[in-house]
Structure formats: C-alpha cells, structure tokens
Amino acid sequence: MLYKAKTLAGYKLEALSGEIGKVKDFYFNDQDWMIRYLVADTGSWLTGRQVLISPHALGAVSEEKQNIAVKLTKEQIEDSPSLDSDRPVSQQFERAYYGYYGWPSPYMWGPSPGIGNPYMGSDLSKWREPAKGERHWDPHLRSTRDVSGHHVQASDGEIGHVDDFIIDDDSWTIRYLIVDTRNRWPGKKVLVSPQWIERVSWSELKVFVNLPREAIRQSPEYTEKPQLTRDYEVGLHRHYNRQGYWVADSAAKSTPAEVG
Image 1: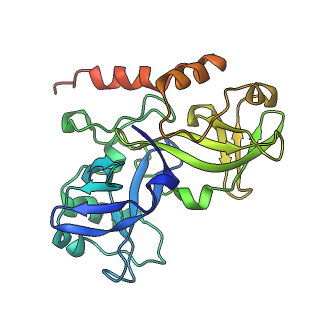
Image 2: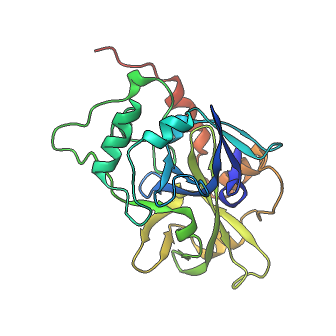
C-alpha cells in the first residue's frame, strides 16, 4: 500500500520482543529513491545513537493499530553496530551493519529498472556482486524530513515546494513527491513521480522536474484522501503519457533468476 511519510511518522515499532519506539524519519537513496533506513525514535532507550532499521527487517504496516512490525528482537537492535546521533551514515557503518544482520549489502541490489522503480524483493539469488570498477556505494542518503520544503522547478519555472512523500510499503520505495503549489495555484497539491525528476540540487535545495508548468497545472489534483487509488495513478500517468511504475515492477518480480 501507499502511505505518506508524515502519516507513518509516529507509528509504533513493534519488535519481536516488544515495542522499541516510534517512526521518526526515513533515509532514502537520492538516485533510485529507495528507502534505505527507517529512523526510530527510541525515547530513553539507546540514547545518543541513531537507531536505523533496514527494510529487510520491516513487516506489515497496520493503519488500524498505527504500528509497523519489526522482525528483530530488542537485543539484536541493542547489540547492532552503533552510530552516534550526530554522525552521517558511512560506508564503513553500513558494511558493519549489514554484516551484523547477515543481509546483502544495499550496494548489491543491482541497477533498478528505472529511477523510482527499484525492486529489492526477497529472492537472494537475484542480488549480484558489483562489477569490477563499478561504483558500488552511494553516500547520498537523504532524509525525508530534511528534503520537505525544497523548491520544485519545472522545465519553465518554479511550481511550489515538496510537502511530503508517498512511500510504497511493498518495496519501500518513494513513489511520489507531494508538491504544494499554493503559491502558484492556490489550494492545489499535485504528485510528481521520481521518474520525472531530472536532477536534484542539494546546494540550492531544489528539485528539477522534466515537465512544463502548464502540464503540471492541469494534472489531476491530489487530495488528502485516506488511500491513493490505482485509478488515480493510472489517470495521472496517462495525463503525462508515462508508463506506470507497476509495469516495470511486475516485470522485475517475474524475471527468473539467472543460474550460474
């Protein structure tokens, strides 16, 4: 299902041995827009360190109970590699972190079918070792909380700012940025897929979208409904004459693993 990042913030995290805290933030890869970590607020437990939970360990999201299942024990989390709360996530930490849990490195997930269309899945046989000479690590982890507020620039002018993100809890991918255009078109919010983003300038705090302002202005309005429907998504992609991410995802899931 699709959830707003701000909606998930505050959801309880239910580990195998009890509650460990609440959702605080998400770190995502700024190239394929895949969630790399959920950041947990553990209150008075594990103070002074960042508690990061990989999507490998995330289970079902419950809207009714407002919680997310975590397939780890409190002891596993407490004994995991520690990262100070004021330190960035380094490659060294990530190798230690994934090695501790016995999970494949995120740098082995391979190229995604397209920006915004990664599929991590659970079939370990589909992961690959990076090719020799290939850049197999990405230090550009970004926070959904920090990127909220960034200006959004169409191909012919500014249209608004990032208000929130819509996350797919099946693949833990950012499917859309919610763009608030009220300073241009009063009261209207629109969705922009990462597939349509040309580049992000972190120094300018700006997201550049490869779409003209008029096309965005005439796009289907996004309203704060409980659940985003596939009919709305189909209409949105049809408006821009773009293929839906679900087409590539379906192909990625059905591709048989190569036998070495």
